[in-house]
Amino acid sequence: MLLLLTLFIGTLAGCGTWLLLRARSFDTILGLTLLSYAVNLFIFAMGRVKVNAVPIIDKGVAATLATHADPLPQALVLTAIVISFAMTALLLGIALRARGETGSDHVDGQEPRP
Image (cartoon, rainbow, N blue to C red; front, side, top):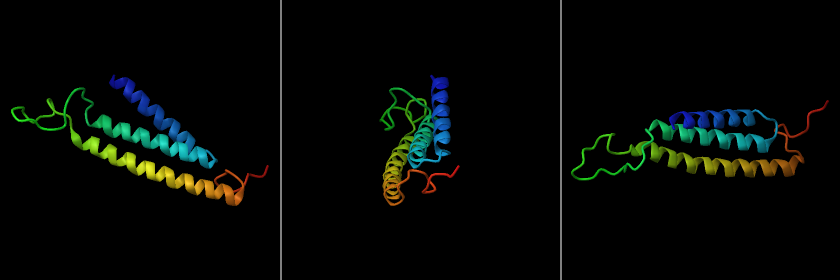
């Protein structure tokens, strides 16, 4: 399970980096989105993926990481999701405005001359 999660995070990060280096604004935005998904999964995986463990401490149960999930990575990922959604919306707005102004989807504003 952990190997599959690691491979998935690596694939997302690799695809996001490849798309980020493209010369089109939509590809760049999609690459940033995939890279933020990879970072979110990485942060979540660092918090020890645990099934059926509650992050709330119960009375009568020892408060250790063996019996409870760590709530800090969950809070960090939730915050990062909100921030990445706002960043994606802002970048899409900027890309649409640039497309309307220049008539091109290229990040430099014009197609490269051969």
